[in-house]
Image (cartoon, rainbow over all chains, first blue to last red; front, side, top):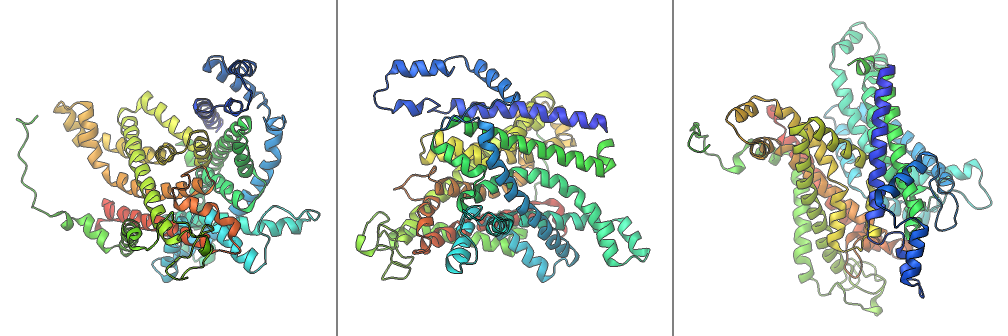
Length: 316
Length: 295
C-alpha cells in the first residue's frame, strides 16, 4: 500500500511540474504580456518601459524566469496582485472558500440525485422512466450552464420573486439561512449537468454489477431486494464512481466558475474574470495554478480512496 | 507492395447506405432527430437571412425592444432595433462554423498525437500522455479565457484557441484504441511485409480506429459550440458587430426583466444545436460499436 501511495504521489508531482510549465508558457508567451498595460499609458517612453521590465525581471531568459517563479511557488510566495499589491494567495483564499462551498453543495446534490436516477434506470431498464432519464440527461448536457442560470434568474428571481438573483448573502444579514437561500439557485443550476453525467455512469455501473454471480448468490440467500441493492449492488457500483468524481473534477470546477459569473457569486470564477479585466497577471496565474493543483489533489485522493476500498487495485 | 498484393475474394458489392452501421444509425430514433435538428438549423442559417426582410445590421431605433411577433419581426428586436431573427441566423453561421472548424482542427491534431503516442509507446508515449494529463488538469474554461483575453480575438483565433483546449480527450481515446490494435495479428502481418511505421500508423491503424474518432469528433462539435458561446457571452470571444450566439447573450442579462426574449432566443438555438450533435454522437456510438452487432 505504501508503495502504491508513493508511486501515485510521485506521479502527481511530475504532473504538477508539467502543469506549472504550461501555465507559465500560456502567460509568458501570449502576446501582450504583463507590460501591455503600460504601453498605452500616455507619456510612457520606451526607456521607462524597459526600466520597468528590468525591475520586474522580465528581460531575463525565460528558463531563468520560470525557475525563479517555480521555486517561489513551492515556497508559497505566489507574487502580489498588480491591482492592490496584496499577496496573491491571500487574495485567492477568500474566494476559494466561496467556490468550494458552491461546488460542495452542488456535488452533494448531484451525487444523491444522480445515484438514484441511475439506479432506478438500471433496475427498470427500458422502462418509460429509463428512456426519459436517458433523453433528459442528454438534453441537460446540451444546455449551456450560463444560459440556464439566466433563465432560472428570470423565472425564480424576476418573475416569481422566490429566490435572490445573485450574490452570496444580503448585506447586513449574513445568517446561515440567508447564505442557504442564496446558495439554492446556483448550486441547483450547477448540479443539472452533473446529475446527467453521474446518472449515466451510475446506470452503467449498476447494470455491470447486477448480473454478477455474487448478486445472484445474495438473492438466493433470500435477502430482501433492498438489502441486495444497498449492501451488494450499490457498494460495488459506487467504487468506480469515486474515480469518476475525481476525473470530473475539472469539469465541476469549470462549471462552478461559469455559474459564478452569472450569479455574481464571489468565488474564483468571478475573481478570474475581474483579474483578466485588470490584466492582473499574478492573480490570473495563481488561479490557473491553484485550480490545476486542486484537480491533481482531488484525483490523488480519489485514487487512494479507491485503493483503500478495493484491494484489487493496489495489488494489481 | 503493389506487385505482391494478394487478390482477395471481392467483397459483395455494397452501397454505403446498405452498410450495417448505416442501417443501425437509421434505426436510432434520437440520432435521426438530432440529424434533423442540425440540418434544419444549418438550412435556416444559410437560407434564412435571404428570406427575412431585415438586414442583421439594420438599426431601427423606433422599433427598439419589440417583443417577438411584432410586425414582421418574428423573434422581436434588440436594444438597437435590429431584427433578432436576422441576427440569430447570421450568428448561427459564425457559431456553427467556429464549432465545426474547431472540431476539425482538434480532431486531426488530437488523433495525430494519439496515434504517435499509442504506436510508439515507451518514453515518447509516456511524455505525450503526461502532457495530455497535465492539460486536462486545468479547467478548460480557465485556459480558454486566459488565451482569449491575451490574444487579439478574431473568429480564426477563437477557433484555434477552442481547438487548443479540446484536443486532449480525442488523444486519450485514440491512444487507448491504437494501443490495443497494435498487438493484433494484422499489424504483425503488416510489419512482416515490411511496411514502414507511417504506413502502419496511417493506413492500417488509423482506418481501424475511425469509429471512436468519428464519435468523439461529433461530440467535440457540441462542446466547441458551448465553449464559443460562453467565451463570447463574457465578451472575450467573437466581437460585435459580427454576431454569434454567444455574444447575442452578452447584453441580454441586463435586459432580462424587460426583454427576456433577448436571452431566450439565442439560448434555445445553442441548446438545439448542441442537443443535435450530442444525439447524433450517441447514435454513431451505437452504430459504429461492433460489439452491439446483435441488434
